[in-house]
Image 1: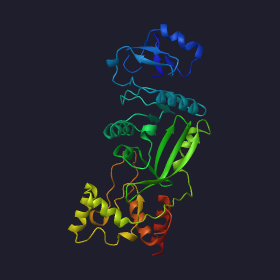
Image 2: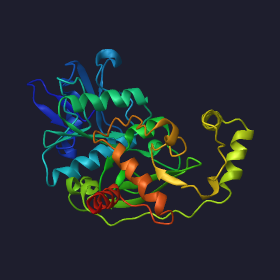
Image 3: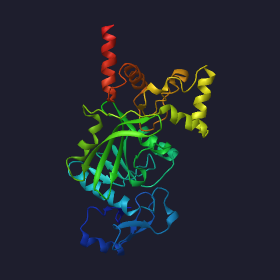
Image 4: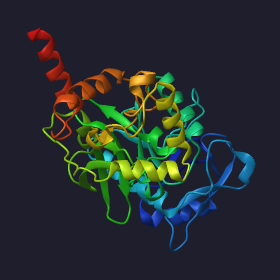
Length: 331
């Protein structure tokens, strides 16, 4: 925790007081803003000064296991936001029983997620913010960086815009930078492909940077064609991979063979689009708790375009929508 209440009920924010005054807090009677129980100052030589509960079980809304990474990132983001926006740290929201890491201009909750949590808990917290009309942005620490494979948890951190498609925020304590991964696609082997933008801490207005996914861009992604797709599928079936056995069963059920014509198939597609089975099951959109905008039309337009432009690069959803609408007007 970076905030506490003094005996008069005034908020003490460790990020807003002089370093020389921090040690004086050790002798003060301090309370947690959420549960009103006693907290004390922890001020060592290594970790960022912070408050901790006297009794670990005394508060249901605060974690006592914040890492150095988490505390340091909150501190850096607080100062970055404070240059141009109204920002509070760890403000308790009683209507949600939640404490966002940072609350910007009273309506944007910014969460720095450095530790693992369940996908169910992430969905619960996100839906809680959305139910009270708060916008929430999740910035993921090192353990949750996107990497090359999409897990069930990482899928819930994905967001979407017409200008950059699927995107995912990362924050890097060691490099002191914020990263935007965008135009995220997945190939037939499950490997991810995407572009990355880097923003050094303190460079520019942070709110403007966080709006990057909603700005027009001409970005496009080229992925080299994969070789021996049929051989890859045969290996998965040979080793009885559950995913591929299920797909094979679906093809058999419809009188087709999974390997027929797969050498020329589209090998890279938007996250969540089950390109191998949509012709049998229809277009299904998996759950993305951060995404409110309907995206089925994006899947449909992508498929329509790629059927006749298999060598084209991968574009933003807005490009496919523009082409699709143009074709409708011509007909």
